[in-house]
Image (cartoon, rainbow, N blue to C red; front, side, top):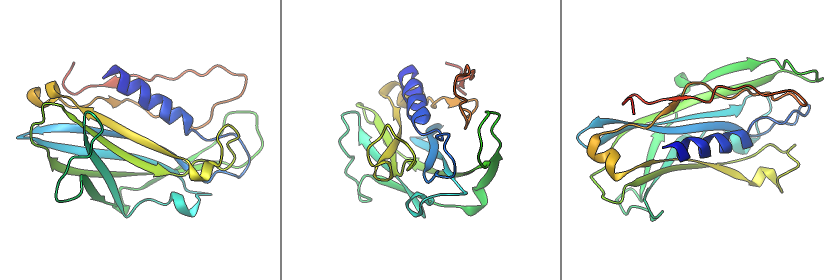
Length: 200
C-alpha cells in the first residue's frame, strides 16, 4: 500500500503545471482507487483533472473511461468485455477551479477542471490479485524535460491483493491534492497523508 501511494505521488508530481506563460495543454493529474462493498463487488473511482483554459484537443475528458483489468503479472483478464470496464462521463460531476499563483511570476491564472468516473464492478476472487489501470495522454507542451510531451501519457493504477479480497479491504485515499503551482527557490510544504476507511 505504501509503494502505491509513493508511486501515485511521483506520477502526479510529474504532471503538475509547468510555470510557463499560456502554454498549458495537458492532463493535470488523477487518482484511481476502489472501495470494497462486499460479495466480490468494488466501487471503482477515477478522479481526473485537466487544464480547462488551454487544453489540447487530445486532452478532453473521455466519453468513457476505460479501466483495464489485469492479474498481478500484468496479463489482461480475458472477459467478454475485453478485460476492461467502461465508465461513462458525467458532466454533472465536473468542477472548474480557478487557481491564482502566489509565486512571483507574470502570467494568467490557471483553470483546472476535475471530473469523477465511478462504477460498481464485480471481480471474482483471484488468488494472484488484480491490477486496475487507466492510461491517458497528453502532457504539457511547454515541458522541456520530456521529449514530444503531447505524445506522452500517464498511467493511474491500483492493486487489489489476495489479502484485500479476502478481507474486503479498500484502497487508501489522499487527503488533498498537491498544489498546482510550485514556486521556484521556495520550500514546498505539502501534507501527503492518506486515509484508509478500514483503519489499517
